Length: 113
Image (tube, rainbow, N blue to C red; front, side, top):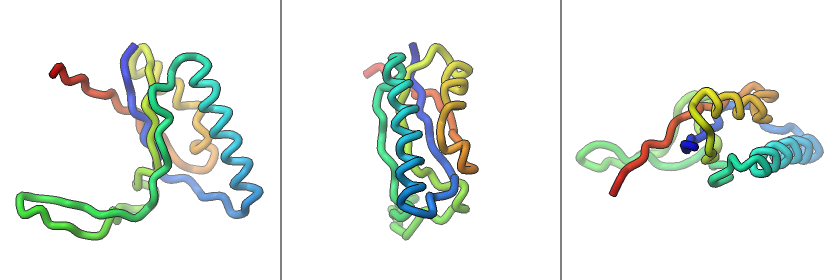
């Protein structure tokens, strides 16, 4: 099996604590299913929307990221799957899809060091 990163982007935030709890339960059930089937490498963490960007040879630091809200990475998970098609199929169960978001599926490059 190969490793893949799921990058979670966009999606509406819950509008109430009750709705937040329901969304969290959906995520936990999905993670449990992935884990029970041997696909979880690292469940990852949600990311704050704020941060800093360091760029260029001058190493300039600016506030960011300021991409459109739908493009900001909101979290990540590392999984194992047979190939990218299998990983994409696993991503179809992600609860963010029900909230207007999307999952970017990226192969993790292996470095032999």
